Length: 137
Image (tube, rainbow, N blue to C red):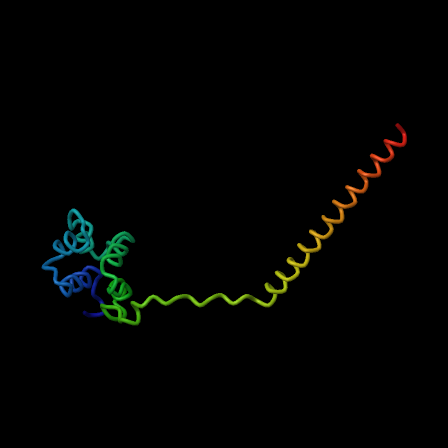
């Protein structure tokens, strides 16, 4: 296909390569549309494909290279390497984050210890208060 081919022309080429007889056949049997109207409006160079059409093509034909279909760059089909989903690498904790976590853990432990001391002091004050009340009674 030449560099000035339209989206519609590339879509026709792709649908033929997939074994569809026409754009109508591709729309109805390939993309499961009720009619080919959405695709036929793209015959006019002024009309651009909607995101819905692009997503439908991608969802039903995962091996289609959308870069080629949209901009005529690359190949019609993705390679096997392109189709393999790569797991993103495990995020590495930053040194500052690790230090922050260490400080937070240390502060949480200190808070628990101080809470224990506060509870003990409160209990002591209650005991002293009861003793004082008994003496005055």
